[in-house]
Length: 285
Image: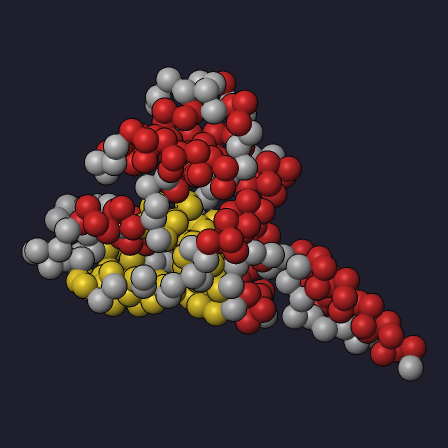
């Protein structure tokens, strides 16, 4: 499954005096099995962008193709798109409403028309994939911690068996431990299932270790679209638009400026440690 955005623009309040252009001629292709980070500061257009991918918003101009079909064609079934492209909102706990977690996760599959047994099997599988302990399945979702609520909400979308999962700021409001646990679980899910995942964030730190590709949004346009190492090489330009590279990028550049011959392209702590060790070995020769 792939999604192609072809010259997509979107204007909020198009016919009013307060019209705002949220997306401006965006072209992107999201192939099967890729883990993509969508990065940008508040107001950059990243959340507006992903809401186009499952048809929640309709572009002011341009076309979106899902498996080769134009989703704006009159005879296209939007329900089919939404069953294949799952979207978890910024505060997914707002999506929880049933009496217990298990019932909540069953809701989506039942809404697709599946029978009770199939819906329950999907719910069990989805809850297992997000790592929620079984003793929490029959508790009220409102009694869970913030991280547990996120896992339950993600499970509710996974139970609908999407081919693409879009997560809009899934770590918002979580402490560092909760943030790391959620991101690790998402990466594990992607590795095990080869599901296409889009992770929306304003934090380079959140995505540096996990994604295959980063799309940087700024003022409704794509500023960069490349592998993490290439994107982070523009760390000074990123700072100018209110973003920042991972801390290891700054540390390695500081070491280089002080005469330490270290590879500055590392994006994770493990890669940075290896770069420093290699530089020490080279200097010792």
